[in-house]
Length: 175
Ligand code: IDP
Ligand code: MG
Image 1 (tube, rainbow, N blue to C red):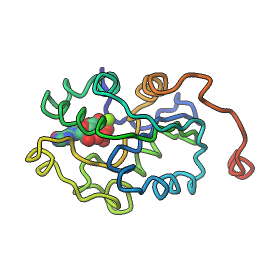
Image 2: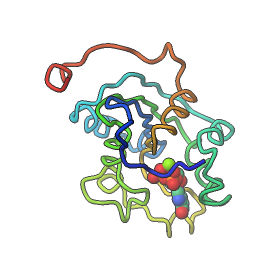
Image 3: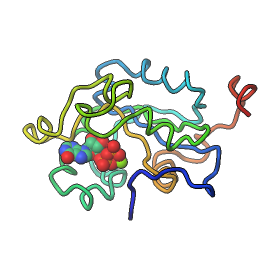
């Protein structure tokens, strides 16, 4: 299954939902609030949020295609990282949310992510260090890479009754 980041297509819904995970490194470093603030500042609506400590079996479901894309070593490191402490999982809703949130998050390796992105501004980790330590690269957050991934991941992490419909003040200006 192709899960590379895709540019918005004309047929895509304008208002979208995407899954963001503040990974264990973000929670342990106590930067969750500052990261959340960035998403709130842009006007994304939090429609679901919870703190969970997942195990490797759940991690395998979330990262079902990582072995195929990056090989078994990366998957092992990643499963170790994602299950080493609690995470904060959230569903964000807004205009082209999948693409916009990925833009804010930045590219996968913090060392080479663009300044101003969350991964660059909150981490200095590199593939070289991750490989040397046999961990996944510690890049603070996960964000769904495509609408298809978002649908799969939201369904995996949240029950329908954990997702909420309400109005934010941003909607007065945006919609
Ligand atoms: P993404 O998180 O930017 O979508 P993916 O390719 O989906 O990146 O990879 C999932 C996660 O696997 C990344 O967030 C990162 O933590 C880890 N990862 C990806 N490639 C490597 C690698 O080459 N070395 C170590 N960890 C990696
Ligand atoms: Mg990904």
